[in-house]
Image (cartoon, rainbow, N blue to C red; front, side):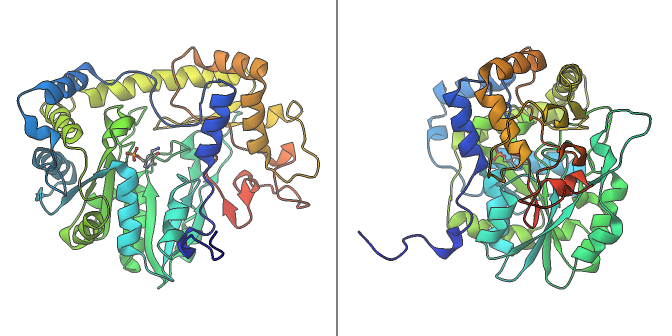
Length: 431
Ligand code: PMP
């Protein structure tokens, strides 16, 4: 047996992954897994049919490697569509790169742009992989929370009530700041950043010459007539922004793992370096089919039969139904303006969830496990909150100060619920 450590130093502290734990728990107790963001409904027929044709048709080259930085039909239609949305002409070969899902796009960005000692600003709550990816690149994550404002008249909170404090945000930028990660619509709150909020971020990026890694995988899942504003379209931002998307979220095919980056060649050339030295090719047939899907959507843009119009409409109804069900069982959902996710206040359940003596495991984590393990409670509850319609939702993470909080050993509950989520140093994405 080797006596020296086998793993590289960059793996230290990034070995735990909450999904691995919860997917296993959900399988063990054969309960519904509300924790992971994927649809429980089929993708649109036009896409499934296109895949069948791609696999069984004459074009046998679809079974072979394609262009390393993106299958030509896919980068062409992405350049056309995003060129229109961003109001500029895009070169498919240099302004677009296809990746293995948005996940690989994110990984390429951190590896390509972040050096030892660089700081990367991350807005909380956040999609959990940003932190380990920044650390693996040698960077230091700098966290800034969205802070909730209590709504008036006992109304339910909306994700729009969670906002950045402009002075606090400005205080996080310095000459060490290499980039900020923006995720709008946000996983897990469902917050859709307004134009004003994005302008605030953009102005700070320009002032401090920082990059913006803009994770927009939920760009089509926006509700209540809200507008998804692309930060790359704001003044001074094209040159410093990589916009990231995902066919998984766009067409409800998360298993296909097709993602992309859009940005200026001065940034994308370095993503290509990362890509050619790691993954190199992405699955050809899946790219061909996603290209056909985008072609269809491009022709129907904004029309009632567009999937990009129909999907958010359906998801909005499911959101409303889930909100009602959660309220009925005593939770206080924060109404999401976008995404698959929903965060709810679970403080009412505090007396049901057993304390674990001598443990500083946070309440939200104990609650989640209790939900999974107590099949009677869990299935009854899950049953009521679902009716099989909104699997792609996420449950219950906001711990209120009045519930005793989940602070680590001995600390007094903090009056700010975001801070009460805190692990030492910062608050984590719920699960
Ligand atoms: N970004 C966010 C915010 C996500 O929620 C996800 C998937 N859960 C991804 C990126 C990764 O997307 P993909 O499946 O395309 O890799």
